[in-house]
Amino acid sequence: MTKLRMGIIGMGNMGSDHAKKLIKGAVPEVELTAVSEMDEERLTASKAYLPETIGFFTSPDELMESGLCDAVIIATPHYDHPRLAIQAFDKGLHVLCEKPAGVYTKQVREMNEKAQESGLIFGMMFNQRTNPMYRKMHKLVHSGELGAIKRVNWIITDWYRSQAYYDSGSWRATWAGEGGGVLINQCPHNIDLLQWICGMPAKVRAFCHEGKWHNIEVEDDVTAYLEFPNGSTGVFVTSTADLPGTNRLEITLEMGKLVCENNKLTLHKLDQNEREYCFNTKEGFSRPSVEVSVVPAEGDNSQHMGIIASFAKAVLDGTPLIADGEEGIHSLTLSNAMHLSSWIGETVELPIDDELYFKELNKRISTSQRKAAKPVLFDTTGSFNS
Image (cartoon, rainbow, N blue to C red; front, side, top):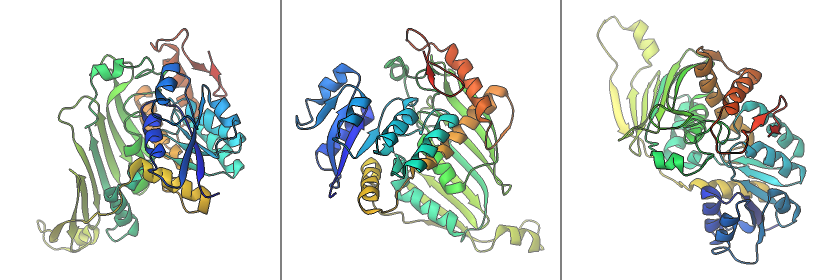
């Protein structure tokens, strides 16, 4: 196999964008061979810019049965991600899944188990892991040269969305259609980076305000407090209503501070470990000297196409993935923990109670205002029940 034959399931905003780039040769290792879309208008629209030689299908099942693909990109609404991934594994197809991995951890655990059993390549579209600044932060933190993390703060409020955005689709910003708001739609990348760089917290206390700034039923404003196993703490703040918004990730460590903001990574490095200095100095108001520098963070920032290229090389050559699909459960666990903490009004410990989250989610799905004949509910196994 010299090229990976790729099919795309779902031709909405992301799926169609991937298709347009792949058909132009953006990833030489990949040949786009098929697409599927249940919406007839979208499928017809895709035929205007894709060659007649590829397969056009009205269902994922037809695409998977066609024999035209070695792998699929899943770019459908969130609830379908685990179900379609499992189906693809059963058909012997490699899977690259758009974020998030799913809506609730119970279904994603099953997906991960099927991926392991299949022996196939499973990747997650965490394209922000290709950003040189975040890669550099990951390297600096994990190298240990700056000591242990003491505090992390991420204000990520530049996700502004108008009411027209939410009104553009009946599934948007509903519990039945999307499974959440800013945490499940806009922030999976940020939450993934948070846990990738800093590790998973042990406890979460969150306040998720639902429909605070928009006429929607899900959260559009979130503040979460995190406690990590080593005693460090964190605050995560996000919203789709702030103008102008802020995107500032600040990590304080024993040997200084990293600040990522305005496409620049700044290091404030102490000349001594703060923990040692604190207990050894004889002066009450003295401080170690600090050297401030902008950290070079150069390199390829290939985003989605970089993830697809990495995925293709993993299938073709066995090279490591940028983002393994099974890691998708980490960021989902964290967003589920924020939701659950807010719903029950308590601090929750990780790993969360999957069954309790599932129960609370179903309560919200049952009263969802999604424009459908009946709300989409789930039975105790996580299967659809309409």
